[in-house]
Image (cartoon, rainbow, N blue to C red; front, side, top):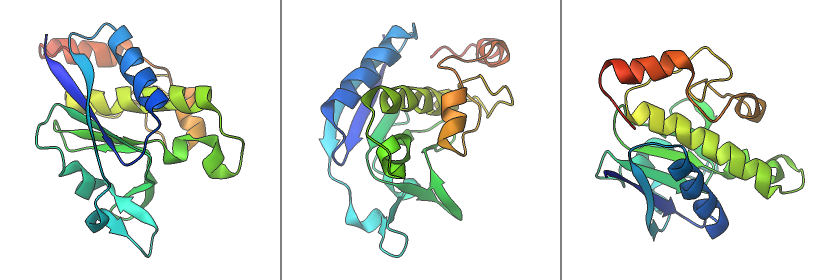
Length: 173
């Protein structure tokens, strides 16, 4: 069984890492998701004017394309104000819990909501790692999320079209 390593960057609560790997492993993928290690957030990726970390710079920490980085840091990419996650083509992916947590918006922290959003965005980035593009089906895990409500609206699974795209080139997650 092939392994996708899940690496914590910064201080993500252990319960989020546990729920994430448990849920990803329950999805029936042929890859096993394993928490590998924890690494500190590099200050070189921090933009003090934005108060955010550059997602592309953090992705460089993963030298293996089958790595999913999870962080609690607020991320941006290029001219985008923020990103929930990002992937380097078929390379490694990163997901941030920062804006997935209702507490970021001044609401009460909610473990269940944040966990579900983290799993959805992680499935999305794993889909990119295996060649899927963004999907127009708002219920598909590959739907673009520009707001947390978009994350809430989408599902945990790939739509039929995305499943066919994966199967057509022999890709199995």
